Length: 391
Image (cartoon, rainbow, N blue to C red; front, side):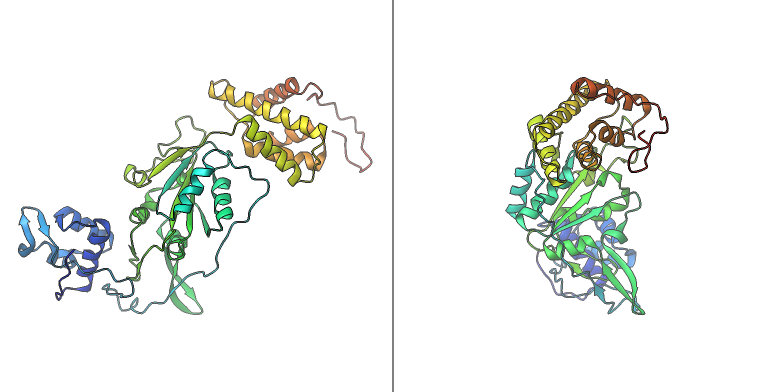
């Protein structure tokens, strides 16, 4: 866009800058677009009226702003702010976060694609959906760990808003300062921003619209313009595809605004791993929790993944309402490392299911592993050497 040195109000210049951010290589704007952009920055009629004056009108409801759009200069704060905010100090947590490589991780599914995306250093927003416990978040974390990329994870919930994401005013040492949120920190550091369980959010996250386009963002509360550093990217995980949960399994999942979803370049639907991959995952977790991989443990590993696979197939055929996730299998392994009892480990880790489902799952496991039984003896008051009841 052509830059013209005109005596415009700082607020009007900021509106023009934001139009340039949102609509690159565009010089003609409709009235509604100008007003919507101005209002999103908190401005009123007096701030945008010069942009919709007769001298810029080229046809009804359309204005050519090529002559007044000013260049973006992040270092210059020209926003028309209240006196109480002028000179407001901005602070940010300078601590960098890098995930550690976890030896129990097994690369599978979309992992190689995620690595390629991160290695490209491109801004490439990615939306990953899939049932709970199938390794979505862990996969992203380990991709960042292997590539030594800074990784900032934000857990989304229904209360998450602009203050949590972009930042807000805080009282520090008796002075009011603007504390930059994790989104601005990730942008400035060129880090990977993980929006975990984004389908738990409300429309309060619409403040991320412009950021999901990979462009500079104007911090409304300070007037500072933050440019994304090379390497910055946004990855979101969710249990649903943003259309809500029709079967009621994820009651907190919301319907995400279509315009918001449209800003993600690709969507990945992650399924549970194959039996072969899941065997490796379970075996690695036995090692992680100090259990030797002897013949007995190898057999238990095979039984667990077969059991989980049968349950999942039944679930997909609408035969049961619950599923055994990869995460649940890892929990069973950890519990087994403590108690050394197969059925007790399984029983404790599926106790959250209703009684009928739990009994059906236990019964199924005894058919997969003929060497065990889930029959529970009556408590006759007998105690073991530690003074605990056997039951």
